[in-house]
Length: 583
Image (cartoon, rainbow, N blue to C red; front, side, top):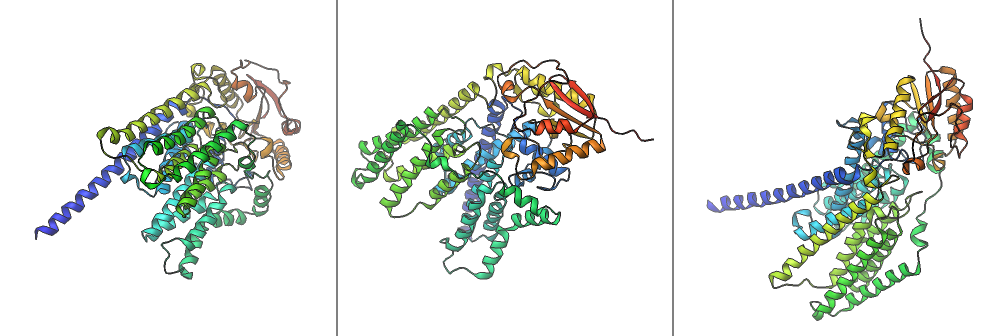
């Protein structure tokens, strides 16, 4: 009678320990994310791509149909996902930054668990600190806010992990949840469609499928995998937007990841990769009997030092070459490991594929959003060919102490570099203006007095010239959700590359419709984002005829079609037509 009680107590104790470890990991993930938001990510703002996805979410919440009402070179899966940012309580923009930060940290943790095939409940303190450091490097100087690439990475990593775990443990709900996530990733950005193909291949060749693939089950799985893309396609098509969707998704400039092959790097960088390859080969060729020797450990330290050198030299630069170099260092370690162990490290190969997908971008064509994960995976792959030291307490303490040094160094490096060079803004010491003073939904975001004046003028304009339709061009996509305004044009950010398919014609048609129906305020900025980034003074007033920067010709075409009252408020000029008065 006692044995079952003892077994029950043991199982209960084990469950409690696992739950406690999970709770600890949840706590440090949340704490790290909150610290990053409050200490790093809330500093700096520029009215270009920051708020771009959030504006699309605002459109979705107001009933607009992707591609029919909203022109986009990408599927609007991210817009649907980040409706959560708009709906959650709190200052909207800061909440959206917090969610993006949490996504990056969670993505790093799940990716580390999946690649190493080791759940977080089995992690040592040293490994936990190294993963936290990898998250900091992944974040680097990227301006965290809702973004389709972050969403795609997050969904693919969680999807692959859940798919693998569910198949290995024969939990249908888990692996099909992974399939759903992979399908959703494909409608955040076309770059992540290959992840869906990988999911399909895994369904057919995963080691857990020992008795062959059952056709009925596979058909259901494929249906789950394609569920979100099919719902998206059906919804847009039912509204009559299939043709627009096709022309928009295929009409942009193709991104092929060419920079990974032709990075245009200096010979010194090529030499670093070559030296790393030599060191990796040397580590792998050390005889088993000598893998505890100092020579083996020195070689491993040399490989790790080269990785650190690449990150340090890159200064965590946005879309920097350091991400490309880390990609090739990881590729070298994969090849060496596969040859020596005669077994392909498939999960690490998945990371390389994911890094390629992340680099398929018009303006961010380096896999720096996975830089920390690539560095950590490289170290772990190379260290397979060495043997961990055993014995004295000093040797056992070396790993956590070294990991702590790496974590503290990564944190300090990120804080210093971001303070030196926030995204399109001035150094931290000059970011002394809280943008919430101009727009409450921007509470918590700090920038320069010039940016504060710019936002205050924008808000004042919208208040002084009330209208049902408001546009602030050519940038400033953030303004629509934070001021609860409706942009009548089918685009929120008139970037030249975003002007795809028949976007110019549709913008012209909307301009004519506005003129016919009235109740509009269309503002044009005379201060450019580049001037704001340099904190140049924002004029208190400009004449209504002040010139506007218009490299595409779209703005002046809009201006010529609108024949309402010419207005000027602060640094903005515009055209206003009040709503018609009804008796």
